[in-house]
Length: 357
Picture (cartoon, helix red, strand yellow):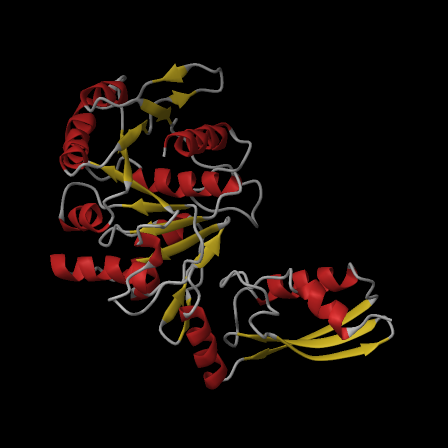
């Protein structure tokens, strides 16, 4: 007969998808009952109506059937306010969790942090910078890396919609748990704005939001944190350069000469603030017809000339085209499926980032 000890040992491998720690370690497993090969138990969620309840349930059932349970009867409860407070305190004590004490700051920004920061920027809007940010983050996650994505484009936030995210982050006693999609932990101003309301903020408030994204979000361990910056060289870009001096940058442009000319300003800003430019991504490079012929709708060589001007390299050329909508369950408006032509270009880009960053 299965024992309680065997059940707890098996469930140590089941993680809360938001907190990324074992349901056993988080004391979410309660009221275990065993009747030969029939197991009953309760999983106590951090909040009632947790959007990832189904995922946790599937993982628990799979783990228990792997040790011989023929039938698993699973019920769900939710933590009390006191239990959530105790969990928040436990998270604060974890060295891999951000602290709410601004004097301590975020461990992601500590000198011994192993997280690599990739800032994606452009000289102007409309060149597909956010599309590149989203697909680069997803491509890095597909290689097995632990990846976070900050939608730092406060005025033009679009990442949640582009990734098909339909729910908001969980908050446990002022600790924000980023939303995870396609293996990427996401944080965006869009999660905190009602009905697409415009954000009317000035520089100091923008800097505070960026600081909050680091200090009040439970990121856990990350290999890479991708930042989708606003276009241009304004306050948010300056805050990123001062807050994350170790960040490296990707400049996004289109082949059009004017777009490349404007993008050079963002690149020059990075160089003047001693930030390494990993390379230039030329988006909307061409349109490939069914015959295989390429049409250069926005001209040619803008990305190559920009890379030469910034003394870096052209690391990707992304064609024009929307993602295929074959898999409705996994579909997101701007995420290219793995194995698609454009998806493979992003995988190659991710590999270059891993080699260069």
